[in-house]
Each structure stands twice: as structure tokens, then as C-alpha cells.
Amino acid sequence: MSQQWIYTIVYLAWLAGASCFVLGLHRMNSPATGRSGNQLSAAGMVVAVVTTFVYLIVREGGLSGTALVIIVVGFAIGGGAGLYAARTVKMTAMPQLVSLFNAVGGGAAALVAIDDFIRENSGASVDTTIFVVLGALIGSVTFSGSLIAGGKLQGLIPGKPIYVPGGQIVTVVLAIVALLGAAALIAGAAGVITLESAAAVALLGVVVLAGLIFGITMVLPIGGADMPVVISLLNSFTGTAAAMAGFVLGNPVLIIAGALVGASGAILTKLMADAMNRSIMNIMVGGFGGDSGGAGAVAGAGASVREIGADDVAIQLAYANSVIIVPGYGLAVAQAQHAVRQLAELLEERGVDVKYAIHPVAGRMPGHMNVLLAEANVPYPQLKEMDEINPEFDRCDVALVIGANDVTNPAARRPGSPVSGMPILDVDHAKSIVVIKRSMGHGYAGIDNELYSNPKTGMLFADAKVGLEALTTAVKEL
Image (cartoon, rainbow, N blue to C red; front, side):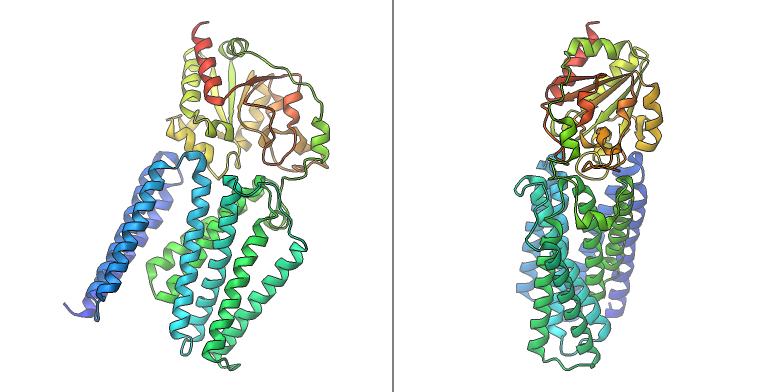
């Protein structure tokens, strides 16, 4: 078979893999088809990787024995690590894993760009140089920024904003250095200025170093409440860097996959920022969290709360007409999604109308609550987004809050609070409020939740799973 026929078959296989990505992403629009969409996208990736591997072997020149061993070992290590992570990482740690994947993707794109530049910088075209520089710069920012974001979520780095002395000035200077370095490299490729090979490589090193430090200084000052948005933004960066690597390598499937990730990540970032009533620039300049001495903390300081037992809560739930369940990160930590479904089914058997209120940024990543509840086979029609469910709290008999904090804090409606302006679930409009929480600890924003001192609120202090199981038992005994 001629090389042209081989390349044609490979190209068609790449397009088939890319088509799987597009169709898979479309099917992820709904939890009902999300699993098959994920499987379709995975199948597309298998096609793309296997096809590329076969092409490298059969193309003219082929692969050396050493290169073949390196690729096979890479498959074994990467595939093994991915399989291990998928099977062992808990759902609550998924955001950290996503951050790690972002870092790996960005770092890989940067390494591809750097390698291509070192091999071809003396004869690289302007177009290639542009893609190389952008891939190296965006990949470097993504790599370091994602590691910091993952460290904050894992608790290895404090979740509150960490301000570097002169941080904003340093960040601006780094951005200018990176842009000037990129411009100089592109000008050198265009022949506008003369750059020796060693000087060009050194300049690219400066750009990469500036990008790495920029990623750190960009994410460190951002508080934990904004981490879901930051993860989404870095995911978009990863896709963009991968697309640049695709242009460098001339690989259409990498270009398409990177563009899909970059575009979808950017759209999701904008939607989440809008849901928090904040601009992306405002989030990047300074995030929620860390100012625990602000107005929100003062308002809640010393406020008394009303503790309530499981039997009393069971009576409220069993004889209510309408119950709205508000899941949060505490539910995820306790892996209580199955317990809440069992309680909801028991209430429905008694004629209670049960719905779930889903805040766009509840949990630690976009769609966190949707995924958890779908895993427990909670009927999708019962999951109501914030705008749809908020008007129903006024007619709700009991609002059951499970581990949610900042997204229910009425302090967001008052100027001067660290969460001022953030849209919240109107839980305080319900006739009765029950909060299941292990303690009076703060959420990501680091302030007291004024909902807890509301006279209508009863606090059931317990692990989410233990508390829900106690409520289920108590309802059965009524």
C-alpha cells in the first residue's frame, strides 16, 4: 500500500475520532445520555491514539526500536495511572483530579511546542512560530496554575487567598515579559529582527518561565469559593494549548479536540461567572474567601442557633406537602447521595412532593451535584436549577439543606459582605428550614452563614449520611 493511501486512511480515522468527540460532547448535555456520550468520546480517543500509533509504525522511515519502547512504556504508565485514578479517586476528589489532568494536558502541549521549536527554530515559518509560542505560553500557565488550584482543593495549599507581595504588579510584569518575548520570537521568524538559534531558544525559555510564574501568581490570590470557575477556565486553557499543539504537529484530531475543550470550557466559565454575578476579570483579580472579618462574619458573630433532633425533623418531613432538598459539598464528602434518594422515595410514598435545588456552583466543580445525584438514580426531572426552583421556596413547607453553605447565605443580598451580589438559593423563604451539618464551620467564603441563626432554622448536627439514615429510620417509625 502506498504512503498516500496509508495517510488517507489515517486521516479518515482521525476525522472519525474527532466526530466521536463532537457527538459525545453533544450527548453530555443531558444526564440521561451523558454516560453514553462519555463512552463515545472515549471510543473516539481510542481510535485517534491507536491510529496515530499505527501510522507512526507504517509510515516511511517507521519507528526506531528505542522510540517504540518509549511509546509502549508511555502507554503503560499513562493508561495505568488513568485506570487507577478512575477506579480509586472518590467523587469528592474529582475536582483535584480534573486540575491534575489540566496540568498534564497543558504541560504536554508546552513540551510539544518546545520540542518542535528546538528542532526547527532556524527554519520555522511565521505561522508555525505563532502556534509554537502560544502553545508553550498557554501550556505553561495552565500547568502551574492547575497545580496550584489542585493543591488548594486538596488542602495542600490554604484555600484562602494568598497574596504575594506586589502580586498584581508582578503578574502584570510577567504578562508583559511573556508577550514581548513572544513578539520577538515571531518577529525573528518573520525576518524583522535577527535571532541566533541559541538566543531564540533562550528567549523561548524566558517566555515559558514567565508563563509558569504567571500561573502561580494568578491562582494563589483566588479564594476557594471561586475555584470551580478557575478550574473551568484552566480547562479552557488546556484545550487551547492542545489545539496549538495540533497546529504544530499538523494533526487535525488534536486541533478539533483542543478547540472543543477550549470553547466549551470558555462557555462554561462565562455561565458560571454569570451565575455568581461576577465578571471573570473580577474573579481573576481577587476571589471570595479569606476576609472572615468582613461584614458577613460580624453579622453572624455570637448568633444563637436552634438545635433539633432527628425525630422532630422526621415529623416535619413526613407531614409536609412540599419538601425541597438542597445538596452541597457536605453531601458529597459523606457520599450520602444514595441515602438522600432513599429518604426522598420514602417521603414520596407518603404523598410528599420532593424536589432538589441545584445551585450552579454547589460543590467543587460544575455539575458536581448533578453527577452525584444521577449516580444514585435520582430522577432527573426532580433536579431544578436555581432560577427555576427559587420561586417555589415561598410555597415550600420544609427546605432540607444538606452540607450547603455559601450558596444559601442571605448575607449575599447585603452590601459589604464577601459574597455580596452572589445569587443564592432562597432557602430562607421556606416555611421551615432544616440544616444537616457536622459543625458550624464556614464554607469557602470563610464567613458565618446567617441562615443558621434564622428563627425558622433547625440545625441537625451530624454527618450527612448518618443524619439522613437517622431521618429515614425515624420516618419509617411514624
